[in-house]
Length: 357
Image 1 (tube, rainbow, N blue to C red):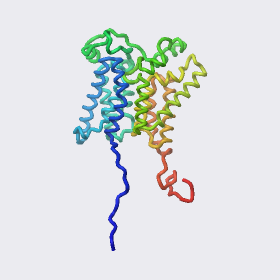
Image 2: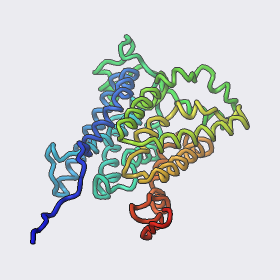
Image 3: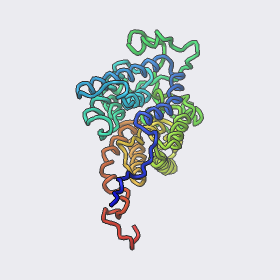
Image 4: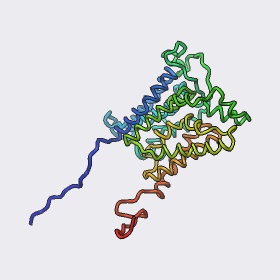
């Protein structure tokens, strides 16, 4: 009797890997980051390099303590991407120790304590940002207006080193972001139109010519990078679209109710960390739901929380807090909104072929 040799299934092979995905996300972030460097000069570049460098040091230390490989081939790029996201969400002229403390929190507490890549419950960059914002509110809310990198008044490399390390005083006036200004002045009874006069232009905010963190301001570049990731199938559209639509709906309703108090949808969509978060942070596959329906639920909840925190809570920018709250709800969403397993009903029972699934 002839025996039939065992045969494996018809598997498809693709050149996808964690490192490749991380590199593609960083490539999509590069235009907005580079433009942020152009707007804020050498201090922002130095702060960015310190953040990434310290994150890699903390990553290597954690891997050595866990007795894991620390060769260049073993590093998957996740620590670099985490530090990148943290760096461009910080004020461009923040002191050096903010970058080091933030990187340590992100890598050690946000990632490695849970077991490393794929095990963390919360987005590590947002864990660090929230911790820094609560612990050091002054340093994390002191912004500088854009300074043309090529202009005569821009700080030199040595000026940038002095600014970041606190050894030199550069002649520049710090300013509040638009959301900070709206939150503070609305609370003092001022009309929204008076607050925004001369400070807000949709074109300038879309192009990044605004008071913001290093990489949050250039909305069009962030959108372009996010769309590239969607077409490259690195992320899906469910979370970005559902989040943006929810924010726009809430903002429009309340703006129609009282336009002198509640900004319109464009202010919420173009200012703050909205575009950076919905395309590059909220879509983290580890801390967001697995199914398309679950991701839509996640996005709706994220958009609602962002608007609520920005409008009525103590902090003017609610994106990082909202992301962490939705990260905590992700296991619950996955439990009740999950895809059907092939050959079974949505409840997990064996599929009766005479019935529709």
